[in-house]
Image (cartoon, rainbow, N blue to C red):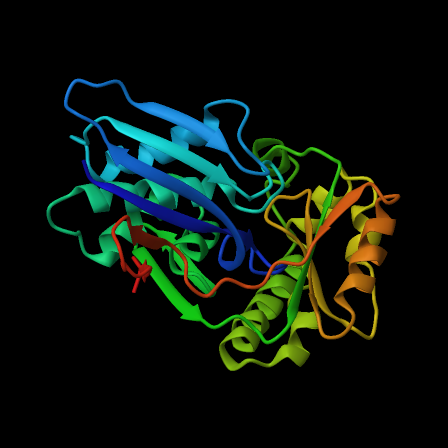
Length: 304
C-alpha cells in the first residue's frame, strides 16, 4: 500500500492592521504519516506530538480537506503528530485543512492545479491569511470573496520571531463576537493607512516600517480587553522590538525582533504574570511539504 508523509506549518494571521488579509508561516509543524488501507478496512487515526489533540476536532479539519479534493478516498491509517499549540491563535485548523487538501491531492492519479488546491484550503478555513500561509509558507497578503481568490507571496522579513502563548483561552468564535458591527471613519482610515503600509513593508523588506504598520484599531483593542495582560503586551516598546501584534484571534502575541529575542520573550511573559510559554520559531519558507516513503526520496513542496 502507498505510504507518505505530509506536513504543514503553523501561521500567525493579521499581523495587526492586516485583519483577515495578512499571514506569516511559522516553523512549528503538524505532520501526517499516511498509509492507504485495503478497501473495506476501517480508517485509523493516532495522535501524538507535544500538542496532540485530545478530541477529534482536528481530525475533522483534515478529513474535510481530504474529502474536498478526493471524495472517493480509500480508508487510511493516519498518525497525526502535532507541534502547533492548539487554540492559541497559531493556525492549527488552517494547518489541518492544508494537510487534508494535500493528502487528498496525493491520493489522486492526477494532481489538481495549485490554484484549485489553494482555493480549497481558503474556502475550508474561511480566512485566506492563515490558510494560504500554511499552504505556501512565507508571508501572504490575500483577498478572498465574490471576486475570487487573489494572493501575493513574499519572503518573511529578516527578523527573529517571538511568540508568547499565555495560559488564557479565547475561542475564535468568542473572539469574533467581541468585535463591533461598525467602525468610525477615523478608525477605518487609520487601519487602511497602516494595512497599506504593512503590505508595502513586507513586499519591500522595510523592517523599519513594521512598528507603525502593525498598529490596529479594528480588532486588537476589543480582543485585548478580554485577555488580562494583553493590552500591556501590545503596548510593549523596546529598542530590540520591531513590531508586535495579537496572533490571529489570540490569545498568543507575536513579536518581530532584531536583537535579544530571549529578553523580549521574557518581557512579554512578564505582561502575563509569567504565566506564558515563550516560543522562538523561525519563519517557515516552504508551506506544505510532501515526503514519499521510499529510499532516497526527497522532500518537495506541494505548493510551488
